[in-house]
Length: 464
Ligand SMILES: [Zn+2]
Image (tube, rainbow, N blue to C red; front, side):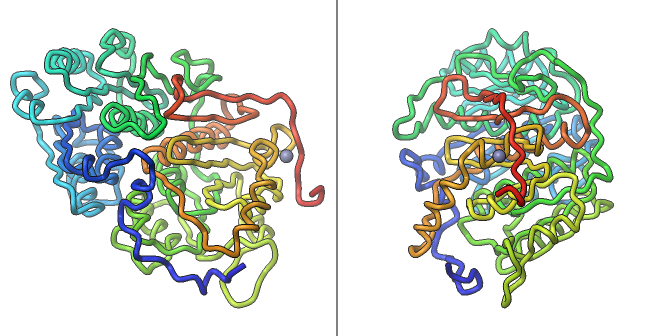
């Protein structure tokens, strides 16, 4: 295996090169389209972020600023006084190629129509049934693509504008929108709109037929009814993230906004141009270690949190010549939970063997899988997903250059938020752990499901 320091970071890949690898993705078409996003709370911001990062050409973000002026910002940007201004300012830096405007505007049909008629895609993200009803009626009349969604703190829902009958059921989603459901529903809203106008090869472009729910307080996670209630308490809980890429960036941001204030970030990578479409905090960080930059950006969002960067590679045993970190050293940080945001099976196996509580996430361009493993209480990720087999295959390929895989921000963020949700429940000592995993797949009619297992394992370093 090559020493990672000898590998040159490839800068020849473009900003969109990973999503352009998806069969059926048409960057030119996507870049020529326009969208209107209605509602400027967290759900609207998540939709906006996915559109900006993927390079949709022209976006109008409409809200009533009075709604967001008081709220805590999501982006590492303190320059503006309202949350929506702060989001737009930040996202303009993330992708300067995109035209983004924010409009503080009354959400009434008469005043909106002039903007709606120019847009190819419409997203409605408020918790207001009247605005939803108005947009659905407009979209039906003008045959526009509309996806609508709502969210509360730990629950959210979305539906296609073709199915207006779900508006009344969504009505019970009230109050401030939480980051975890907003990331999941926001990612899915963009995926559903994309499916309508630009289906992938082999993807049947089937509109979402049902009202889709995400609910952290439901045993099945995708049902409307609460089965339990949890008091979320993350302050003082020590979290170690291994990885600082497309999963770690949104996952740690979500945990931070939920109150986490003790985080170590381990990574040895530096940002490349092809990261920019999924890892939005690295727009101004080329050449600097991801772990360090991510810790700085998260520190701007929550200055009082203790966030420490370890610019090191995870290895089984200490090696000379470069910065590395061993499982023993990670244990020395006394984490209550390890967040595994890795992209290779060799490193995933090292974490697996540590026998510690672990949240794992893995994605492809169309799907996401997330699991929470507790030794002796659930199966470990290796038993669930067969890491050992994949690691052996990975090793065979080592002589060739690693092949980049197609990926897209919306799916990464859905995965990251599913991981954050399970981490929140575990660290708060609330709810029921799922022995098994949560699976999202945009090709599936149901979109997401929980796969439950009945057997458990106790794989620790000594036993393997
Ligand atoms: Zn196992």
